[in-house]
Image (cartoon, rainbow, N blue to C red):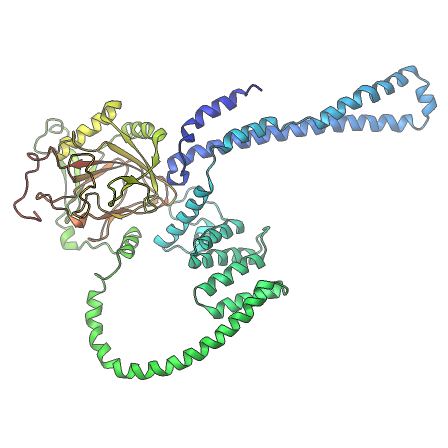
Length: 545
């Protein structure tokens, strides 16, 4: 069977996707899926029109024969006495009813089914759906969002608001349940129940949701609430076997727990009286240490929300913006660039309007067909591998494949004064649903001697990072150890040294890419290495210089 033109076009469009999976890790590649779905809808509508056309023909045939047979059966002999009527009866029964049978049996699904079959091989997988679901849970935690806010689509900076159905909330709860994440299971099953109680129509019933909800609460140790929801379930379905068993078990455990609590409370009261004086003396010291004892994960999430930025007004007053030509570099003497201090320790600078719209479009165009799941260096093997804490896709562009890439590399060299021949290729990254890169170092530590051994160019001395899109919400680059946050701003770039002049690693440069809450984040970066910088950045005399 010869494929129609649109099928051939579709195959060529999707060829680039066949080698890629992990759709959820790149918004840029997910946009292709929207066009795929649009094509499917067009094909489905063609099928519906074909079915409607077929039914219309059958209806006209039936209406015509209904009128004819009504007249004929009033005087059968007189009707057939006309030779034309007799001939037409023979013809209808011998030929036309056969044609009608063929029409009714004709399959109009061929075009739609062949289109669907072709496209299904490029559809997202179960892993993509689960990855997107986990991304929503990650965003919920990082940005302190309640389930109802996400379900109603009331996110900051959204242009295309969309609500989640009961089934959507239920599926999200099931993903959490499969991971034994009972905290999120409770949140999303409770949201599904809330929407059901508000009257939303759904094929799901409250019994199914309550079954998951009560068990998730039990797993978190709240027997009293687990029992309450189990009783609600039994009011709806008194014969529910598991719920009946759970009710007896919860009641027994609750009674046992109450007895243990009474005994423990008496013992605690006695101990409290003895320790009260000592505790009061320690309170002041503990409060002074509290900030430094905040776990890195919590500091990272706080900074992503815009909280915990540790820049004092005095330090802020020492940050400036300027026109910069890097010691009268010929390319910038007549047109210096705008440079802005972002942070003092570590020293981070931002270059404003440093890459043009046309250059950004070209970089994205070159990178998009090659985007693959982003990797990290495994400190044990020194090789690249994917990781759950880095959710994005990346591609590498060499200077010789397009003049724009070569021009950008030269610009970085002119502004930093560092050698680009030993730098890594330009890496382009597009972040997916809730795309992030959790806290990490760009340089190799002393316990990772083989981190960049295969490159033979030494450690990563510095990082240059272009922001190639604005992000409606989220997506900041944060430095948890020093409380710094740098927001994505299209057309700008930030630069910092990962190593001191002595070659020792600057541990204050540990940084992270916050999850993208709303928007599509494109960045490109250049990792600059030690070799070739001996005369451009001479070694310092002290370790932390």
